[in-house]
Image 1 (cartoon, rainbow, N blue to C red):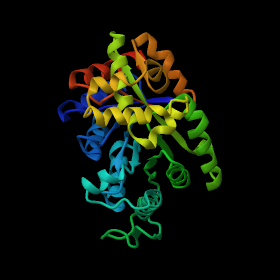
Image 2: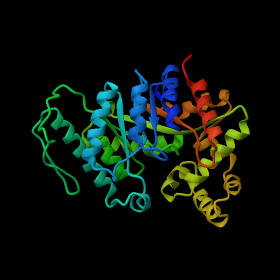
Image 3: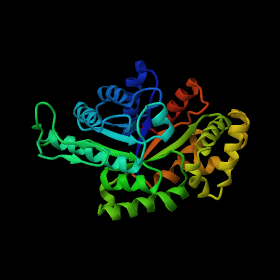
Length: 339
């Protein structure tokens, strides 16, 4: 059975307490995103507030950061947490990286592959190894100011890479410890495209599936008011569905035309939320999200988690207010936590 993690976030005044609730409810990990708050700072708060669970970032943006700086942060967080840290790296999309972070995005799969190798070189230097990395994009040719480290027995931080297409999947399978699956998915997309792609990439890299962690996000909306949960799931599906890169998810159930429909509504109505929700049929919620009352969602989640090693439970956020975000998180903890 897959292990389970929960996405937490919000004001720092409450973040540590939320992570403690995740731990108290018997979950295996707490994950943070990098949207309104920086991921490494959030992970630091959670690492100090908890004792048992893994602490992961889903995701930390790679390309705006030096791989050496990220490696140093991950090394320190792994020490701080007692080897509980999981660094989840993501590429984001070209326009965000260039227009918000003033960073380069060319050859993202190649860039990510070198990024991970550069970080691993930094960690091996910290363990005292005489290594360097000289890639086409990134270089790590010397250790820190005090020379190679002496932490010979330290565990390396775990790295998982967010991947959608085959090139990024190959980069993850070749160099990382696992892969982070996008929450916009379906059981058919997982079994028909994602998992076979991972198996092929691992085989090409000469690696064993048992040494690689498949972590999968889920759009999970829980409420006593079933219609409210369904609406929130539709909002998130509509938002993701406007992106052409995600059309293969719709294609898994023969709904490929939804991409063009949602893009049209998105532009024609100037992002009118009601119009976007109306454009998402009820069956799409059953296929691409887990939504409903607490009793309903328990069985629905099994469709996804039976195929992966770790499932990351997070709610819809597009067009959802702070109160409902908090209510949905608490419903997830109550519904799926071990009593």
